Image (tube, helix red, strand yellow):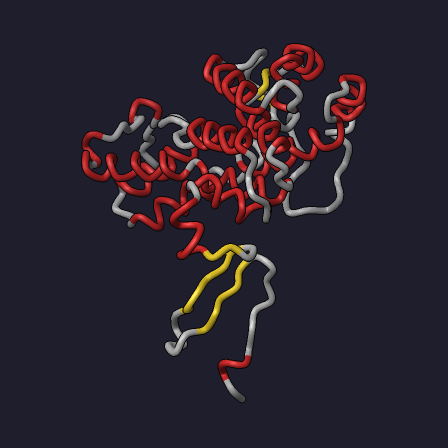
Length: 264
């Protein structure tokens, strides 16, 4: 059998073969020549949007995507996904292991990427109708179809530890709403987040703000989950490397919380 006859089927990527079987003569993403056209004419956010949606991004959407990537790039050193990367790195793990730790810890449905997916599904169902939101929120805790995930313990997109949104979350929401425009889902969330907080009993979270922005950007829930996973990796990476450079002696260890007991 000719080893070079096997092919992948993809509508996203296409390559023109060169004389070297390991390299392409030209590479196309949704029909756009990446190295001859996109690289010289497009911004990173334009190219990213093309890959995720297959469409050219509108100018106001480009601004929204840029702002969203800034808001998500560094979740803070107290965030479990960043802390996981720091722990891995200071313990001697290599770069890939530190980022895998960050991805694993930040993948779930309690402040993680899967919560963004579930939150975006809520926005798709209820959109900009408070009455529909009220009905949809009542169904969040209904038994779900069998899945690898447990049923949600709180409303996706809202923080179970807060009664109202954190100041940084509100700052992000305001900037994203300004970029998204007056008719956007993000602006609607800014206008109605207090009503939703009253309905849920919890403050809107950055996962919910992200879901609203990705709804405006026409992301699918599945791709929104992927986007949220990698969008927060820059902060995890730089904090992991700093922790490695500083060494284990400079890393907090909560020894006062440990109670050792003699087995004898």
